[in-house]
Amino acid sequence: MGYPACMARRKKYRPFTPDREQTALTPAISGNDINGLGETDFRRPRMVYWAPDPSEIPHGEMQGYFYRQSAKIPEFGERRAQRMEVIEAALPPVANEKRRTSPMEWTADLDQFVSSNLCDMTGVAEMKQDWVFEGYEVPQSRVIMLGVQHEYEAISKAPEAEAGLEVVDQYIRAAKAAKAVAAWIRTQGWEAEAVTGPMTGSLAMIPPALACGFGELGKHGSIINPEFGASFRLSAVLTDAPFAVTSPRESGVDDFCQNCRICQDACPPEALFSEKKTVRGAHKWYVDFDKCLPFFNQTHGCAICIAVCPWSRPGVGMNLAAKLARRAERSNDT
Image (cartoon, one colour):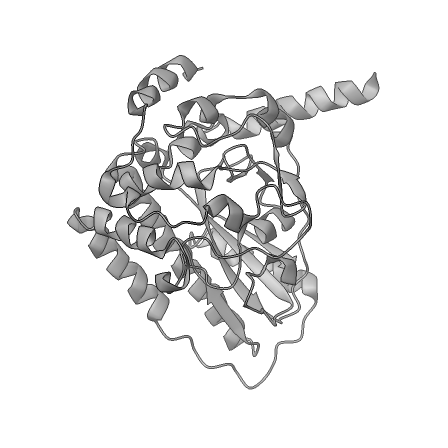
């Protein structure tokens, strides 16, 4: 439904050739090698992009190019200034008296941030050092994940600037949510640290988001959630407050992606694979970093793959999940 039209519209961006200025900045090392593509043994992730200090990573000059490109449109600079204002805002001091209540009550209280529209979903995972970038440590025992949904009307314009501005707007909202949750925890007498995107510093955020029930990894390398599709952004809060963890969630996404080519066929630089790849010892969906990044950089962050994903269309995801659940049930009965 709508698939042929999407295909025709998206293929106008092919073939894609990076501009010479960007090509000249390409480092000698492949981003796929940094990510661990083809490695059969586990290791922690290495920072490949969105470094707080771009000079510390091989692709730092390309990260600088991304910002120079978007700076040609003044609204991007204005939105990023707003995001930095949120990020740099001071958190309240930690209250002297620690709140003592059950882990289930702690986690249930996160609903207040959804009901007040600060974010659209929450989850809690037990912190694992496997998710932390090499060279960093996270001492806290819990990671609270927060998700904010894109406005479909805006993100569907990808890769035009309107979609890129929508991404920045949601990163602002995600940052506000993380700061609000961290501030609340501190008023309850517990330390808390906000983690905001896209420059998250120490923590890779997709693994804890999968662990806490936000969805499953899709072929396009983003999480697919039944309610919001792939069209949402993440932020997080690190704390030792005794939150109860929330469970992983399966909705048939993995099998669906095996048989769907919509994002793969829509990707201008052809950076998506038909099959899963081995990455640092895990067999999973993977996006070819070296093919994706140049188009991403030249088009305000692209986002075509999450915009065309069938799960991202309003009202579609839950119906798809129900259909896949019925299919799985029939398979189990035979």
